[in-house]
Length: 252
Ligand SMILES: NC(=O)c1ccc[n+]([C@@H]2O[C@H](COP(=O)([O-])OP(=O)(O)OC[C@H]3O[C@@H](n4cnc5c(N)ncnc54)[C@H](OP(=O)(O)O)[C@@H]3O)[C@@H](O)[C@H]2O)c1
Image (cartoon, rainbow, N blue to C red):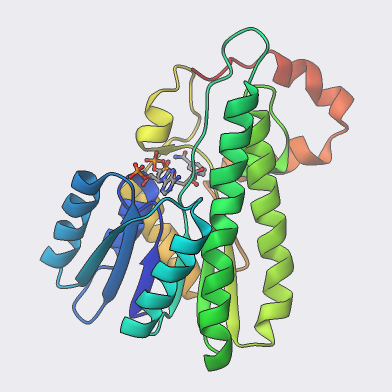
């Protein structure tokens, strides 16, 4: 069972839920985010469950700082599990869709930020031939949606990169789990003004993710009806599904 666990984006939503799902006596958590007061609150909740929790204010796009933070955490307590969770989405409800700045920001955080988490984690775990890495993708990474092109593309890249890494890292004794959630109630989805089918609480998602990561499952897609819809949308020819997807509401 993982004892020394590092989580990015732990100050909110799914990252906070994961931190609490793992918090227990004997567990050492390294939690990062950018909002100190929210991050400190989550760390306090984890300590109340008996865990040791160290916090760090780190922007995942800061490659040298991420490498330094992860190496320092690994020296303090050799990491068993690293969860690359931090991510952002953006609106698309204005004419012209996503701005260039927003497109670049989404790729920088969701993709470069995740790479800045995963590569130092591999470097730390490989010599020990032991460890687990979880990458936060999304069911929206199975098909590009006109309401969130950059977000969908960033999550598709995360999913496919994680799937590819898994085969190679298994030889080094490192497990890889790609997480593909549907809609989960978090600050990220709180701004959505459209119906979110099968919306799940972060707490329920946290315990589902913990079980799947602990079992080194290759891919965690939930809830299953949304996973089935995502699979179908990806399987059908785009010219069949475009007219439907074009009618979906934009994100605020
Ligand atoms: N909620 C869903 O329905 C859903 C579904 C599929 C996938 N996901 C994915 O799950 C992950 C967590 O999302 P969430 O719903 O929990 O959203 P959230 O509540 O907005 O949390 C996002 C977390 O990422 C952190 N973060 C954002 N930009 C960062 C940066 N540049 N550097 C460091 N940390 C940064 C935030 O930290 P601060 O707040 O401290 O800045 C926060 O802790 C994301 O990757 C998201 O794409 C969410």
